[in-house]
Amino acid sequence: MNEKIAILMPTRMRPDRLSSFWKSVVSTVSDINNVKLYLYIDDDDSKTIERAEELKEEHGDRIFTLVNPRIIMSQMVNELYPHVEEDILFFGADDLLMRTPDWDKVIIEFFSSVPDRIALVYGNDMAQTERMHLSDPNRFATHPIVHKNWVKALGYLSPPYFSCDYADTWINDLANGVGRSFPLPFVNEHMHFTVKKSKMDQTYLENRQRFNRDRVPAIYREKQGELQGDILKLSSFIRSFSEESVHE
Image (cartoon, rainbow, N blue to C red; front, top):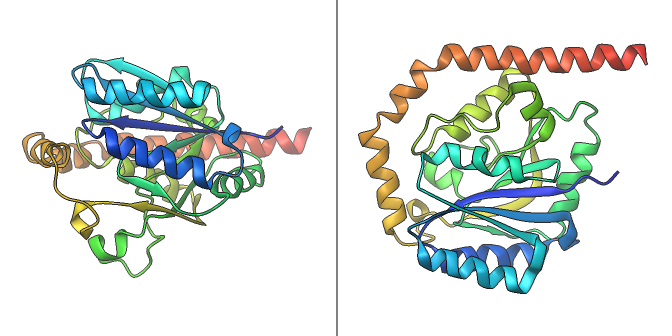
C-alpha cells in the first residue's frame, strides 16, 4: 500500500507565508493526493483563519484546520495528530518553501525501504550552514519527518515541553540514539530571518521572547533522563519488530 504524508503545521499571523508554502507544495509534489496539510491556528488569529478557509475552498480535503486557544508550541502537533489519516508525519513550518520536484515520492519510497518504519528523514533546508555554522547542511533535521510507528513506539509525537525550539533537537537526539537519522535528496528551503531570507516579524519576536522567558535550554537539560528512556523505547520497538519478522 502506498503510504501518504501529513504535513503538521502550526501557523500564526502569517497568512501570506502560509499561501506561499502551500503553493510550493502544490507546484512540486508528484501527486497532490500523496499529501495533506494539517494546520493548528490560534483562535485569535482571524487573518490566518480566513486565509486557511480560502485555501480549503480551492483544495478541498487536502487541508485540515484546527482552530483552538493558543498553547505551548511543541504541543500543537500533538493536538493535530489524532486527526491525521496518513502514515508519514512531516513537521512543517510557515517559513518553509518546497523546492524539489517529486519530493513526496522520495520520502514515501524511503520509508517503504525501512521495514519497521522507525526513521527520522529530512531534506536540506538551505539555512543551517549559514545559521549554525555546520559543514554539512544535512547534519541536523530542522523539520523532521517520521512515521506513525515512531508514535506507536513512544506514545507521543512531539515532546510537549518547549515553547520555542528544542522539539526538533529532542527528535534528532532520539533518532541519533538508535542510529536512524537519514538525510534525503530534496530541498525544503527555510526562509528564516537569521539567514536574511525574510524579515524579523512579530511571530519570530515572540518566539525569541519565549525562549528567554521560559528557560527553554534548561528544560531540555532537565529532561535528559526522559529522553534516554525514550531512546530505549525506540530500541525496544526495533528489536521486537525484528524478532517478530524472524518468526513469521
